[in-house]
Image (cartoon, rainbow, N blue to C red; front, side, top):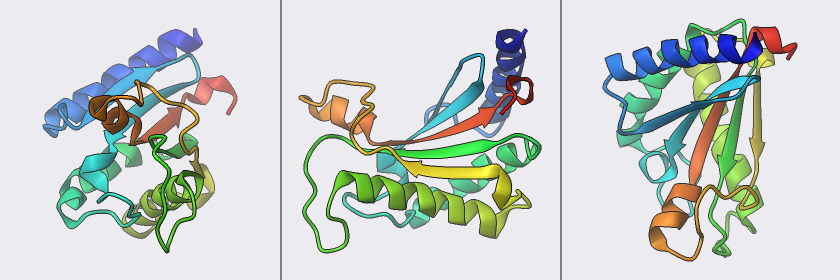
Length: 157
């Protein structure tokens, strides 16, 4: 039942994404627990930075509108990086960078939506959960991402 509920939720989210012409920017997957929107890091952030890019704001505001439809659900924002060590004055590691990126998305949602901050979680996952091969530029680009999970209200989250 949980998987079916997630699938139904995923279909609704996919419809919203398509309706807002975000198909090329967002991938949607689901498990029995949640529906996940994956946004490419390169769209959202400049390399080594954690501020949302100005030109990403129209995309993010469309995502925010979609998320507001699921205000009763726990929404989790995860930042992920590739495995290239980062050395800059602001961030001593990919863990820190990924945390700040997730926080940037969280802050945007808190400031620009009616979502309850208590229902939003944010975490930096660093380089530890790659979805692609870090030995290629394409793979590294895939690994740099923000994942937003909308928990299925049936999953007891």
